[in-house]
Structure formats: structure tokens, C-alpha cells
Length: 171
Ligand SMILES: Cc1cc2nc3c(=O)[nH]c(=O)nc-3n(C[C@H](O)[C@H](O)[C@H](O)COP(=O)(O)O)c2cc1C
Image 1 (cartoon, rainbow, N blue to C red):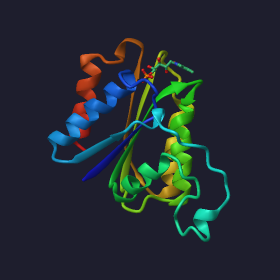
Image 2 (image 1 turned 45 degrees about the horizontal axis):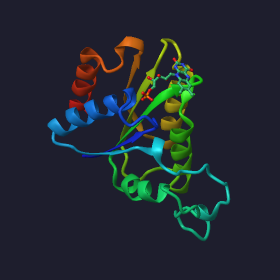
Image 3 (image 1 turned 30 degrees about the horizontal axis):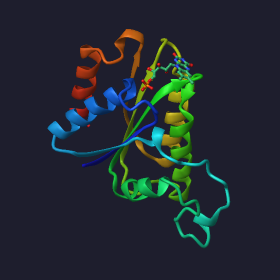
Image 4 (image 1 turned 45 degrees about the vertical axis):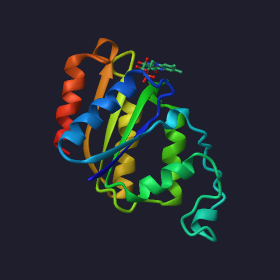
């Protein structure tokens, strides 16, 4: 399968990046092709609700920013992983901006399943992110392969990275 990972952290060697790398390793070991896109460091603006994509644009977004690098990958992806640090009890604004720009496609056509990776300092901070993820998948008719969280000392721990690699092998 073609797997696309969107990493919403601006920290390129951070905790979320380690989760993404572990997922990539596990998925590649199972024969999948995996691309990680660091949307946390990209210039991706919020949707302007101009509706160009649903009219004249015919699925193309009017905003010409780094999301244009994501759309072709999103159109081909069969499995998408959303990965983010928790910022104020929610995914990062960078990841949210990228996800809300899915609007141009409404539903990424080939994606059958998705997974969510979340990193945080504290435990018990995931409810908004998890709720949004599940509701969004329901809306798009996409299956939920699973959610893995890492908080505090779990971040970058051998145990957590092994759990992610094993999870990625089973997708
Ligand atoms: C702006 C900001 C907001 C944060 N908000 C939370 C939060 O609400 N709950 C929490 O447990 N950690 C919070 N954190 C900590 C990060 O989620 C945590 O350090 C995470 O592991 C960072 O991942 P990264 O290294 O991939 O960027 C916040 C950090 C920042 C910079």
C-alpha cells in the first residue's frame, strides 16, 4: 500500500518525528511504501472557504502554498497517518490546517484506513483529538486502524517505538 504520514510537529527531531520514523520502519518491513511529509514546517494556510475547489477548480485548491505538495500524495495514498504533538489539548494548528485543506478533495479517494499518532507531555489530554479523528473518519467513510499515544517518559522510549513498529506491520 501507499502510506502517507503527515507529521504536524515543527520539531524535526522531536517526539512525533520519532513516532513517524518507527511507523515508517514497521510499515516498510511489511512491504508498504511510505512517505513522511513534515507539514509542521510547511507553509500551509487555513482554508479560505472560497469554494473554488468545488466549482471552477474541480477539486483543485485556489491557495498555492505547500499544500500543493501534499495533494498529489493524498490523491494516491491508500493509508494515511496523522501524527501530531498535543497543543492545548488538540492537534497542532499546522496539522489542523493541512487536514482542513482535505476539503478540496472532500474525501481522499483511495484512502481506505487511517491511524493517529499523538505525543504529549501529560496523560489524559487526547479526548478532543481522538473525538475529532473518529468523527472525521465517520464523515469520510474511512476505517480507523488505531490510535497510539505517547506521553512524558513514553516519548522516544524503546517500548513505545517497538509498539508503533509492530502496529505498522499489521496495517
Ligand atoms: C504550544 C504547545 C502546547 C502544548 N500543549 C500541551 C498540552 O495541552 N498537553 C500536553 O500534555 N502537552 C502539551 N505540550 C507539550 C507537547 O505536546 C509535547 O512536548 C510533545 O511531546 C511535543 O512533541 P514534538 O517533540 O513532536 O514536537 C505543548 C507544547 C507546546 C509547544
